[in-house]
Length: 270
Image 1 (cartoon, rainbow, N blue to C red):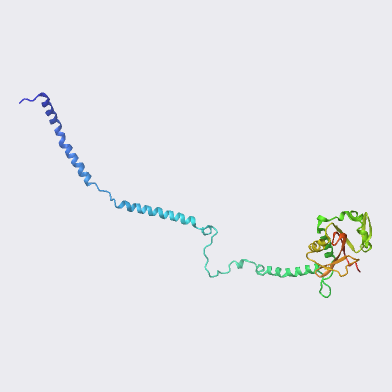
Image 2: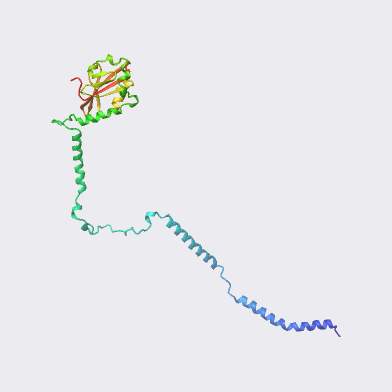
């Protein structure tokens, strides 16, 4: 049987490639065997490694947080000294201190301070032979200086007596008891009188409020029967009569709407 040329040529080509089939089959078998012999990774070990890494990261995070939460005082500094034993060390430092500095010098000064305060108190409030406070001219001058703080809003002393002379209120007084000389244009007080104050303010308010506020640390004692028909008050400083003040009613009303204060350095009655 004679085959056509096409079939003969195809058979011829198959025979040419058959010699490559067997080497390829062998190579494939070798590759499969090599893959089978290769070690398979241990899948159970990977979670262990992951857990170890997780624990390490958690420990680092805890360490960082714990360090950040520590108080500032517990951080080590160069000034931190090592803990000393409770038992006292030998007095090395005491040997370096001069003996004079170990004496209680401060306590001696504290003891002297009350003595200085007592001497100062005696100078401000001199005592008589019986140990009682006696009159002090310095305190009198201080109290006279306090009269400037009396209710300045109603103070009309600068215009006295012109501001009330024409009203005739002064002519109704016994002027010789308070003035050495007085005219519509001015006045001159008696020798023992030191200051005069005129206020367009209710007489009762000045006596009951302004004077006690001005002499808050002193005692005002009303003198019985007053002086020349007007009230007279004794200003006592630490129980000692230091000043006197006459309170003179000016104008109609009871109490009137104006007042004259005359401060005396001595009792005007005697």
